[in-house]
Image (tube, rainbow over all chains, first blue to last red; front, side, top):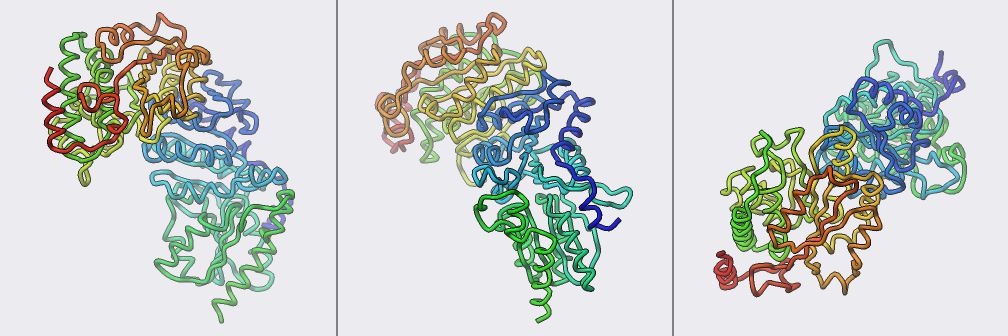
Length: 320
Length: 276
């Protein structure tokens, strides 16, 4: 099955995979609790609450308190998954995330739901395109942007097993399950090469990985072999995978987030300080205009065709 | 093993004096710190650590310990002196306060020092964390209790009220909040800045029991703070009326001493006053 065919197969909102994985873990680990800000439904946690009512803490619409309560629950021996729309969780409670979670270095899992531009027409107040950039500044905090339902579930398990703070950025825009070799495993801090190629490298995460694979298909027809790297783990960062991309000399980064400071910024920092390479960074340049998610993606070239165009440009720049 | 010192007002009084003397020496040597708040909270801390809290400095993360959160994290002079008196680390370490690479940062860090439960400093952080602890205890039906000390000016931060609403609604009887009500904040009086009164009514309206005490009366503090949680169905707010700069005549009720720096003569005067 080619990647393009996969695009037309069944597609899933990753929140379902998040909730299923968490419920399954909670069955066997009584320390797992959830904290929400009236976000049970939007976090897909109504099932969790039915099964574990006493382990579901709804603080109401109060994000600063929500994050602090998470830190306190961890102190009391729980493994809290603090789950809310990423825009409110990360922006409203940023100082709590800094002081109570990252600086205190406690075992709290922050779950930014419906991240990026998932809320489409609701506009930039509800978009969360800045979350990765500002959380990436915080030491101790692992950051994961899963690409599909399978990886979302694996990231939930990895977060629970990791003794320390984690931010999981969960996508809402439907994506297919990616095709992976048998035995594929997720590991914090390790990038995943989904497709090999020697002419250029596309580094993507979240829902953009599917589109990066689509771009590789488009380019393969034109004889351009593209390596596609899924960099779900932003922190810790797989620096060696970025250096190997720099060896190819032509890199495009793609993310459902601000073009400054996130995945593209992380890659730019590595290559600028180790092995310079030609780089194009795709993402949102600023507050998005009104429109559906798909419209906004197309508007900013966050499509298979748009990524393929950026790859052609960066290859031409390298070869010039 | 977890234990709670048998309460003795004489011991607590002596500990409070030592905490004040240590704190003043620390802020004098460091040429910075928050002496006014250190002195207002010293009797509360001495009462908690030498008559109320169940803890074991040899096992600072024992699962069943009582939790204490110093939400007014800038008052590390008094807090560190208390932890040293309680046996969490040697008193000699206090001499490094705010020095290069010291474990005694200007604001407490749980990764540097045993006995610190959560990193505070920015105001309005302690209450949500303390409430999370109390919720954990509630979920586990645990016997341990949670105590949090906030400043009064600090209550201007909205996060306290988010937290207070949840504590009231969840009927967290295992939680005690102590407000160091010295009526002064960094720049002026609390009431002339953004008034808190009627403070007791506010907490009652949020679903808390409220008790007002003289925050320098060890016997009164002991009585309130040792009252068993199982006698209550609501969280307890203790408004401890205190004097900022308590014990040093020229500092008492003077807003300047929120973070004023003593000269040698002032330090000597202060220490000579803190003798009994």
